[in-house]
Each structure stands twice: as C-alpha cells, then as structure tokens.
Image (cartoon, rainbow, N blue to C red; front, side, top):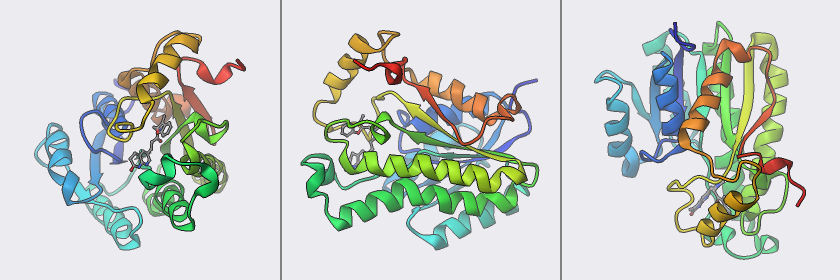
Length: 256
Ligand code: 0WE
C-alpha cells in the first residue's frame, strides 16, 4: 500500500510543468493521494487545467488569488463539498515585485514589502485557517522556503524577509494546530530552474555555485522535492512539525 493511499489534498502554486508544486503534486499522486488544484489567474488556467487533467477528467481545479479572502473561502467550501475532508495542503506560492529583487534591499518600497509578505507569507496563515476545519483526521501542511530566509543571498532581498516570516509562521501554526494533529513544515529547496527563477540575473551562476560548493556537488532534482514532500505528508512524519527540512544538496551546513 502506498504511503498516501486514501489521502485528500489541495495544491497551491502550479504554474507550469517545471513548478515545484507540480513535482510534489505528481509525487503525492503517485503515492496514492487524490488532489485538487488552484491556479492564480486566467493566464495560468489552461496550464494548470492541462497538467491537473492528467490525473483524471473530474480533477477539481479552482481559481485562487491568495490575496483574496473570497477566493480562499470558495476554495475550501468547494473542496469540502467535493472531498468531505482534507488531509494535505501544499503551499508553493511566492511573489515580490521584480524591481525589489534587482536593486538594494534598503530601497524596498512599503508597497513591495507589503505585497511580498501578503502573497508569500500571510497566505500560509490564511490557507491553514481555511484548511484546518476540513482536516478532521489531522493533516499535513507543507510550504516551500529558501536559504535566503536565514542568510543574505544578494538580490533575494525582500523575498528573504518574507521567507523568514513564512518559516516563523510555520512554527506558530504548528503550535496552534498541533492539538488537532495538523502538522506544518517547510521544505527549504536549493535553487530550481522554475518560472519564478527565470529572468533572475545570475541564476545560472547560482546553480554552478551549488555544484561547486554543496557537499553533494550537484543541484537538486524536482523528484527529490517530491520525495521529501511525500515523506512530510505521510504518517511516517507524524511526529515532525514546525520544522524546516533542507533539500539543498547539504548547502545549508556550510560556513565557507
Ligand atoms: O523564492 C524564489 C523566487 C520567488 C520569486 C521570483 C520572482 C521572479 C519574477 C518571487 N517574486 C518574483 N517576482 C517576479 O517578478 N526563489 C527561491 C528563486 C530565487 O529567486 C531569487 C534567487 C533565487 C534562488 C532572486 C534573487 C536571488 C536569488
């Protein structure tokens, strides 16, 4: 019997086939979970429909702009109607205005700071609050983070501050939801070649840097994020909550 047999999940953050959300969704599906998907706007609707549709024609696909409380409410109402319960939630959503990732952090505007934190960190709190009443047998919430949350990565800027908030939010959510057997964890991934990474100047150099300096001397594969996401979602991780698990070829342990 596969490790997520009979589990019901909802996945936030698929944009295309390279998305981390899609890698973890495929792993969850292959482990036996039944999944619903959300997409961010009309622009991504067809992409997500095509990918999610490969899991069957009746796959639930809903629009969700995580800055909209009405969207979030509707997602959990419809997931509740379709599934009757929820076991798994994947948060793989982040955004900061492009100019905030280019200049100096000291120049971050109030607006860019607000947007980055709303979309990349507060959304986890809102989604956890929406999901919790449906997680009647307990549950596993998994969010994606990055090393820039704890050490300075040049140009990651306000996203690093927002990921620090996401990681701290993970701990406070784990505390609040623990009594309901709902676990909340982050996967801190090494750099991945996704849509969110495209156009980031120096990204190729970053992949080379991990190859040169990480203990494993290589980059991370999407299916390795899938495997860790499946473990965290499984009953094998039943005593793990509030943690940040590094899937980064060991890069995070290095001091130099
Ligand atoms: O979390 C991320 C990227 C998230 C992201 C990406 C974009 C690009 C397009 C958030 N907002 C935007 N806004 C856009 O307009 N990563 C971990 C990937 C990433 O992004 C970086 C990195 C790495 C690694 C930005 C600067 C430096 C390193």
